Image (cartoon, rainbow, N blue to C red):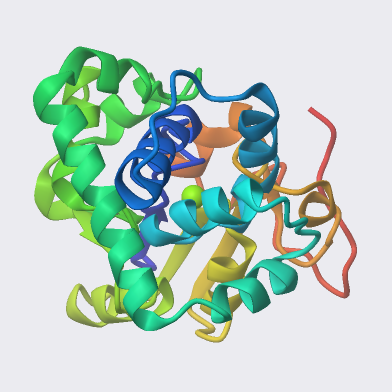
Length: 261
Ligand SMILES: [Mg+2]
């Protein structure tokens, strides 16, 4: 039988951390970087932050986003965001990264219950994850550090082994999946993420079958791109336990084979 491994992104697939990232990025940007006090987060800032969230890939990107929104700069596409990102020096990005993670660590130490409440799981993912927590073929693969993911899952009653939470920082998700397939003698992998670029890049490896999490931080046009199948949250359990999925098959020639559910 074909040995299949499963890789799940965390933010935007398992956990809806948009408010936590907004909170951490706001403190990192205004209090620590600009050194100004903010009493509350303006509604328009919050609205823009959530709207542009799909373009984010790493921790420092959140602070870049806060900076762009604060300066009134509009972003329309991923390419647009990436071009603006290139205007920041490596030193500035390293500083943003440090400030973002430093803020997060401080919030965890000083206000752990509040921080956890800002990290809810998507409805319907908890029980399926509890069921497969001991399955060695299923991994979590994220740009968020493993110990935080482990803590959040524990808080929600999911006892997921930390060694199956993989951290993608300088190495791409595609390369990590490839190396796990090699080391575990896996023949193929299904990969569920809500960031289209991670999925597109992973397609270069013919052993990896990408799926877009339709409930995550996605743009409408990503749902309509027709190349990468879109998974509905109701299918999450089947995605973990059954394959091929009856309702979601890899598409060909841009034809969307999704059934309405
Ligand atoms: Mg994600």
